[in-house]
Length: 253
Ligand code: OAD
Image (cartoon, rainbow, N blue to C red; front, top):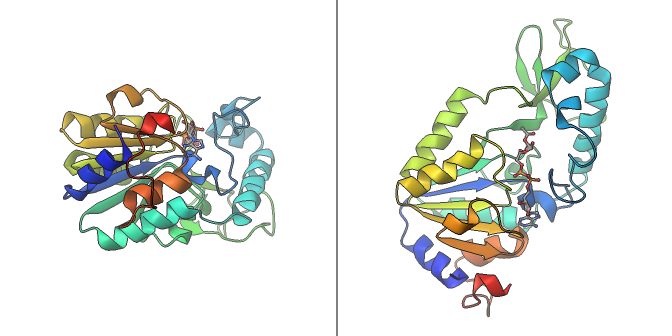
């Protein structure tokens, strides 16, 4: 089980899909959710990331999202994001699915990204339902309001909410038609994203995982590469892997 094997399977693939999670942005300086210093450490996610929390105290919820928006605005895409953007330009059939709301894939140059958990850089009106981009931070007013007078909410998917059905359908189509499915930097604890890898496995795709630690997917992955996305995504996806990386078995990293 090695990077060499993963590269061999990728070279033979006709259709590639990738699912990224918070670990993909960790080396850009953005905290993950469930790691030791993660965003969900020490409090219940439902207290800031749910419709109930927003109904109770929209200012509190917006303050939390503004802090996240400021953090992300000060961060840059890393070599992993850039390798994915580069790969998209060279691959005929490619779908990038991300659970991340930070927008770093797009900033790195990825052109088509299925942001299934939404984006920190979009807002949606709780009254008229209009969705638009909002790149300013700090916002002129918190909580912000729509021209129609109703409150705007962050354009992210909260606990207890369903994912955009059209986006999710596209993600399923990509997972089910891929013969190479890459899962990078996600703990695989949130559905339905976690099931996408299962769907690809069931269809006989090569499923390659990149993560610092084992996850529920690891034992079933075709190849599990142990390490950080910023090093391993370029090593896997760029035409020339950095010298010396090709033959290192994943478990020795
Ligand atoms: P998690 O915080 O649950 O998991 C991050 C994963 O990335 C862990 O498995 C880490 O071992 C791994 N990791 C950390 N740093 C890494 C690195 N540099 N390279 C590779 N792997 C690394 O984050 P997600 O799986 O993305 O949803 O969480 C999924 C969803 O749960 C999020 O989108 C969010 C959260 O609740 C919503 O807010 C809807």
